[in-house]
Image (cartoon, rainbow over all chains, first blue to last red; front, top):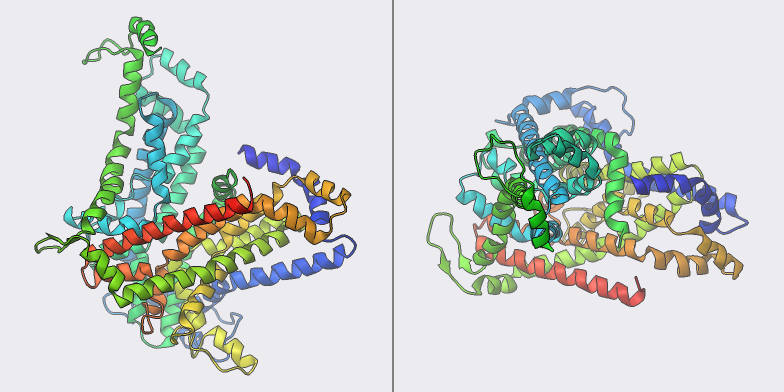
Length: 306
Length: 315
C-alpha cells in the first residue's frame, strides 16, 4: 500500500524526466512514435492467441479450420460451447460435472486455505511464543523448492491415504498454503495493538480477538487471498491430472485435456478446444480485472527488496 | 528478563471464572494460544509439506510398488536415472529449453518494459502493463490448447503466414528439429507479463537525479543506460532470471498437451520424464530420484546465478 502511494505521488515529475532519460534528446518525438509502434506490435503478438481463441470459439465448426483463416467474426454461433457442455461428439464426457467439480472443490479449498491461514497468520503476527520466527521462515522457505521434487512423495502419500479419485485429494494437500500465511501475516502485523489491548480489557477471548477484530479488519486482504487461491486451484492441472483417474471426478482442466486427445478432425476439435480454453480463462481474466492493482503490487513486493 | 515478566504477570490472572481448566499467567496463555492457533495450519503443513520431503528421500532408495513388496535398492534408482537414455535426453532438453527461453524472454521483457515506461501517459502505461500481463493469468493448459491450433501443420495460423510470403510450411511440433524451439517460442511469447511488471517497477524506482548527474558529466545515451540503468536493474534482473529458470527447468504442461515428449524424445523434459516414470511405468523410485536430482540442479543454478551476478555488481 505504502509503495503504491509513494509511486503515485512521484509519477508526474518522474514521467517528465523519463521521457528525457530513456530516449535520446533531439529526435525525441519521432522516437516516441517508434516506441509506441513497437509496443503496439509486441502487445498484438502477445494478445493474438487469446483473440484468435475467442473468435474461433464463436465460429461454426465448419468455419473453424479454413484456408485462408478468417480473422474477423462474421456470424457468431454458440455451437462449440453447446457441443462442449453437452459433451457431444465425445463419448462419456460429463463436462458440466467437471465444471461443478472444479467449482465445488475450489470453493471448499479456498474456504479451508483462508480459515487455516488467517488463524495461523494472526498467531504468527500477534502472539509471542518460542520458535515463532524460525518456524515462520521455515514455512516460507518451502515456497522456493521446485514442486517436482516432492510431488512424487505427495502422490504416494495421498495414494496410501486412499485419497486418489476423491475430492479430498483436491482439497487437503494444498490446504496449508505458505503463500496465504505470508500474505495474511504481513497484513496482521500492521494492525494497531491498541485495538487488541482494548478488546482484552473488555474481556475478549483469544478466538474473539481473531474473529471479531482481525477478520473484519482484514476483509480486503481476505478477498484478495480468496480470489488468488480460487484462481490457483481453478488453473491447477498437474496435481489433479496425477491423482484423478475416474472421469466422474475430473476437474475441468483434466477433463478438457482428455477431450483434446479423443477428438478427431481439425474443425470440431479446435472449435471445442478453443471454447474450452475460453471457458477456463473467463474466471482468471475477471479475477485479474477485479484485482489488477493488488496482483501487480503482489508481484513487485517480492522482487524489489533484493 | 523472562522471570521478571513472569513475576509481574503472575499477579494478573486472565480468563473468566467459568473457565474449567487452571488459570494461566499472561505469558503462559500467550504461548498456549500462539501454539493453538497455528495448530490447524501446522498439522496440514507437517503432513502434506514436511512429510513428503522425508518420503521422497526414502522413495528414491527403494523399489516402490503400490501393492507389491517395497525393497531397499540403495542408489540403484539414481544409477538408472543417470544411465537411462530417455533421462539423459530429458536433462539435455530441459537445459536447452531453459537456455532458449530465459535469455530471450528476459531481454524481450526488459525491452518491452523500457518502451512502456517511456510512454507519456500513465493511463497508457497501465493499459499496456495489463495487456502484457493478461495472457499470463490464464492457465498453462488453455494457452497450450490455443497454441496447438496456432501450430497446426495444415490449418494453423503460423503456416498460413509462411504461405503468404511463399515459404514452405514448417511441421512446428512434428519435426525433431523444430519441436523444442517451437515450444520455447510459445513460452517466450506467452509468459512475459510478470517480468515486464517487475522491470517497469524497477525502472520507475531509479532516482532521476542519477541521470541528471550523468547528463551534467556529459554522458551519452548508451553510456547512461549502460552505467546507470543496467546496474540498478540487477536485483530485478536476478529475480526474473532465477524465477524464469526455475519455471523453464520444470516445464510440463505444454509438453503434455502438445507433443507428449515426442517426436522421438525430442521434447522430453525432466518434468515429463518424471511424470512418465510415475504414471506409465509406476516407477515412483526412479521418479523420486529424478525429482531430487532436479532439485539439486535448480539449487545449483540459483546459487550460480547469484554468484555470477554478485561478481558483476555489488548489491
